[in-house]
Length: 366
Image (cartoon, rainbow, N blue to C red; front, side, top):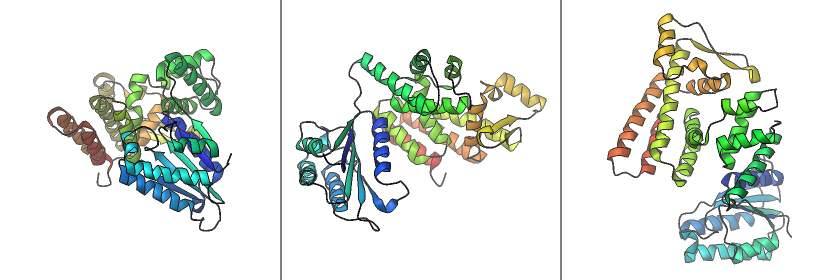
């Protein structure tokens, strides 16, 4: 078995990504850009498959600039399973060329890492990889009970990696709240780690206080990416959510709520009612004494008094608000109104409406 070939695949996109990153970092440090080459393999048709495989083969035949060793990552291959794109003659020919190289053996000093959403285990390509390299499969369990057991083990491992102690009852309560998706589990464990700070034991109250319920969690990552002004991440999350058939109206509602929160906090920052205090892990957002009329508005007229937010969440939202000006947030709100109207009355596909919305809100000209 060659130590230079790795195939990582499965429907659990988060675990595929995490394992691939671990392998890549072990083969070529992330800061050694000359020793690694990444080829995007998210192909939509036969021509794109031919191009991606061609670049991969060319990269494997070329040594690193300052070293004889190099690692090539064929990233996110969409044409190794049973998807329609894999059925074209061009795709079959290209994948056949890659399989032939694997059978013959990679050039000396070259390593190949392939990540994919799925692989046809009946194919000559899969059999070549199985015979010549190391395989890692992250498939979602077919039965609910098995899926729950897998998620429980994954969550327990993530708690341990984060330096947190959690009883089995707490882990189960955590999963009941956040769901079984690996990426969501990892994200919520990170939130708990930041929330508990130096206190490394997770209590049921912590789970209740800071984690998002599965219904809320659907749009959490998207709203969070918008708040962080991270357009590439927001687009990736949006596409994944739409692929999972999450309703566009529900996603847009989550973004609307986040922008409303940020508008309120941006105004508070501008008026110096909310300020940052401390640094590092001790940093926090602190409210000052407010004028009586403002205090009354927040207490009585605002749906949820922002002063009652947990300190960790308040800091997160305040930092996001500081990334926008008041005018930028108002433009975001207007873009949301326009997108909402388009979802109702336009014939434009929902995915196009949503992607244009994110570009309007977070693009460079925003």
